[in-house]
Amino acid sequence: MPVGPIDSDRTAAGGPPFEFLPNASLRPEVAHNVEVGVNFKFNGIFTPVDAFRARIMAFRNKVDDFIDPTLDPTFKSPGSPFPNGAFKYVNISQVTIEGIELEGMYDAKSWFLGVAAHHIRGTNDDTGEGLYSIPADRLVLTAGFRAWEERLIAGTRVHFVAAQDRIPSAFFGSAAILPSKVYTLVDLFAQYVINDNAVLNVNIDNLFDVDYRQYLDQDRSPGLNARIGLTLRFGATSAAEQ
Image (cartoon, rainbow, N blue to C red; front, top):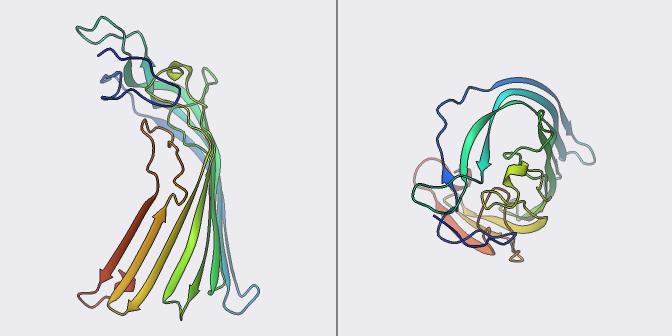
């Protein structure tokens, strides 16, 4: 299946320009993990009803026979005069995966503010190169308010996503995987409890219709997306609890 030129941020139409090959000789991974975490819980910080919750975790994992994809750009499909590459999973003798994750939320009842983030690095210990399956760094901020005796909850969520170009050299210049670029997304959300039997939900994702592509996706990610939903209760559980 020969393909034409592929630009730096888009794949050719008509399916992936490479073959997926099985690997019956894969060995199971053996992981040696070290994790350290701490949780925070505080009530009544500034007012009698506010609260703060947070979790921070750091980890360092050594993995033997780590399973990750590789690409052979010289592979030719049967009957094809041109190399189109072969994508398959292989064992890497040893890798190091380390990082930090955190979550936190301050809730003042009438309003709230939250943060979630991760910073992860994966390294092939034999070559010093990055790993295919490690996600891009991400920071998510959430802010919102409650009104009308908490029948209305509304807010915004902002995603800050870093570039991910720490990939194995075998994939550079191929369409099997493309480095992703920095992007920022803004979402809006709202929930209104009409009564004990009905809840209205509204979500607007990618409010500013940002043109972006998530790491490991070959196609552009969705643009502006709006959804509205109505949950009705038919039973003993209230709609707000469903």
